[in-house]
Length: 452
View 1 (cartoon, rainbow, N blue to C red):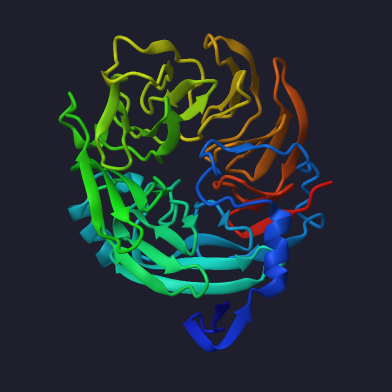
View 2 (view 1 turned 180 degrees about the vertical axis):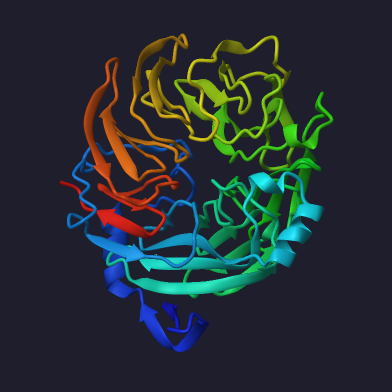
């Protein structure tokens, strides 16, 4: 098995080398065995940020306590994923817009004063050796002229990649979805599913059996699509239900599908504007739908814990809603267990230890919420602005903020901080776990920290 090595030249030009091959070989196989499985999608195997091991270190010294640190070119808020041998990430290099390009964007797009305008983009995929952090591949997938403006907190490479078998899916919203060969990095297919996302790409792809699920909730149209892993062809496409509002800005959303088994049937649960809906991932049929109100720009993934489905309703008045997910059809008036407005997030997802939920609001208020009743058990202002989703490792919860501070606390009925680490580099991506080690992406680099 060969993995082709490519590097950036000093002049900044991407060069592809087919003459130097990196053999995964025995080192990679040993690493895969040591890593105890993969972390092949956003928020890990379950999609809920749950890690079974409780041995992950809390001593995250970003100056000299890491196993390796690898700087990356470009900017991307996508989280790292791995098959147990190599790490895949996406990034984008944006050029500064000229005055003429800025003027053209103001005429063409809405609310540009609130957004960042780029002149052009290079969309990149990067692959690191999990054992050493060595950059094995850095490939330009596409050039984009005059990209749409994005929100200043977003990036052009926010969706997290997904791995299944010998294929990796790299998604950049309406700019394209690429399927690459895991061993060679070669493109197998690409497809564009274009909607007006208004503030840039957000939702990540999820692989279910032989299909790639994509959330396409734009201001102009809203639908869920499944692409064939083999060919990239559209297997099915299901439009979202009609909404009360006619304003497209209040119809958009950025939620990644959650795949769960309910009473022996697979569900893809995808909250969106006004509606939270469960689909059959094999054919796109609706299983149930819930009208949550007027929320929009929904970003946090739903979670399932102790048989209860919990999600956030998004902007402008976010709520946490807990549902019984066993219903069929419209369950708006029949399957609500509880709902609360206290400290519901609009960007970070939730985690749970199957007794309590742990919720971080965008402005840094951490809460423990009873999964059974929705009652707030404790609240703690830890400060900062949050977009990244937390992970829970046994009884340890890890969450990073925009200032680059990683807070670690113990799950339970009382707040107990285990540590706070200042990376000094913005954290927008969610952590990844391999075995007992943790991998953290900041704006500048990727770190791997060994277990105690």
